[in-house]
Image (cartoon, rainbow, N blue to C red):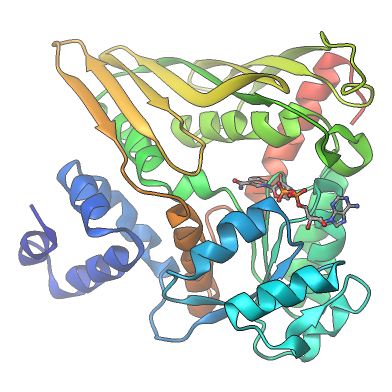
Length: 384
Ligand code: NAD
């Protein structure tokens, strides 16, 4: 059934909402989700979609891989979001990007004069793409400047910093969202739907892993990163077990190791494995590493079937495979290309700002993950 077919079946108001969903998802994605019933699950989120043709101006804070390679290219296709400012320690890099994206030179800021973004009315929000330990400072400074904050994951390098970020945004009456793009990604939404609608039966267990073999990077400096692969990659698996189950873990236990004594892991761990038990009794086991290629995935075992999402956390290439007790199978590759996840994320947060609604990936969501990260590190005997 296509969008028109769906609209025929719905009351006028709901039909209008569907058009709004359609603006965020591609036609192909929406049709696929509609056919499996996910579209109806998306409807409550529509309050987060823009109701006007206004756009939200974003200033990039940090011009690195994620901002220059993904978020900024994603803004080119956005409907409610545009690039209106750049914050960088490298003026030449900022000028080059400003010329490419049509940002006026007056909207280029340094980390020192960052607070003067308060006077730039074209900047509604900031996207914070700095090393993890800098997220708190720049979120708080942005909030004090009256700007909404979309902050990269992991939210911060301590529970106290997360709480201070939430407080600062609340006091300034600005929105705070953590960039958990997978919570908006269609294949991940489809996986959630197959669990919620009972297709997999009673979920018993989940496995997940995510990691890579790291070279020189600030991610190996505990002062900047807060920790090793758990902070950077493991947090995807941790967050996924929570959105898949819809529950908060009750019991966590973990262990960590360093195998490669080559200097990379002098301040952060190389491997972490952890297990969790959720209130329903679902058990989950997760691994993360900076010592080997480890394509992110999760596998969910239910009484009526099992489901794997491959490349679950990457910028593209998601694929859902399921096998049910009756023998039926699903094999659903997602053809969407990078940077579509970033376009969707920017427009989703723009919708929250324009309609004054809370993002589902709010500060509390980021804080919870950091609280569990703290428990995992404690279980490993690692100071956090
Ligand atoms: P990066 O190293 O490519 O970029 C970091 C930026 O911060 C650079 O512009 C750098 O100049 C600037 N910076 C300012 N002070 C710095 C300092 N003291 N040391 C190092 N850099 C400094 O990093 P990245 O991969 O773009 O990651 C940035 C943030 O985005 C991290 O929090 C990371 O976890 C997150 N991230 C998220 C995703 C995602 O898919 N959501 C993917 C990658 C990274």
